[in-house]
Structure formats: structure tokens, C-alpha cells
Amino acid sequence: GLRDKARSRKLPIAVTEICPGFVDTAMMKADRPFWVASPARAADCIARASRRRARHAEVTRRWALIGAVLRLLPAPG
Image (cartoon, rainbow, N blue to C red; front, side):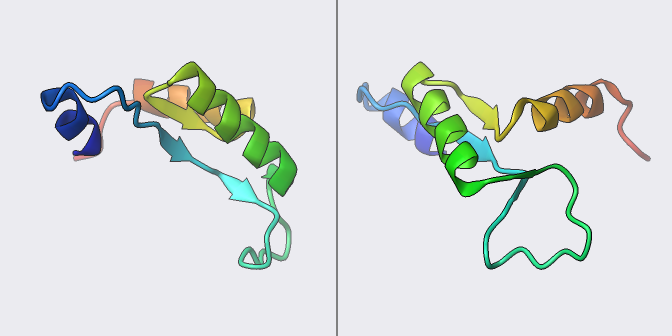
């Protein structure tokens, strides 16, 4: 919605959707975390996506790979 609103008003604003995966924060309380990114690594991934003006970005390439595979699978139902 934000991206469409900025485009319709011809504003020079880029909106990047971030899918953070798992980031090692106090909020994450997994016993055995899987593919966890440090907060610094997550911030670096987000900053790089913002500089590229990417429409969508996953934190760490591993999750980007999983996302790409999931998009290829047929929808349930």
C-alpha cells in the first residue's frame, strides 16, 4: 500500500519489504535456533537492501534461497 501511494503521488520514496527470518534478539526464545542471524548481520542485510532500493529482501541469503524454493511450490488446496 505504501509503495502504491508513493508511486501514485510521484514521490521519490522506495519501500522495501523485509522478511527478517530469525534474528538473535531477546524476543527470540527458541531452544535450538535454526539459521539465526546476529543483529549486526540483520542490520547489514536490511541496509544493503535499502541502498539497492529493493522491493523485497530476506535477511541472509539462506532465507532468500528458501523463499525462492517455496515460491516455486504449488499452492495448497
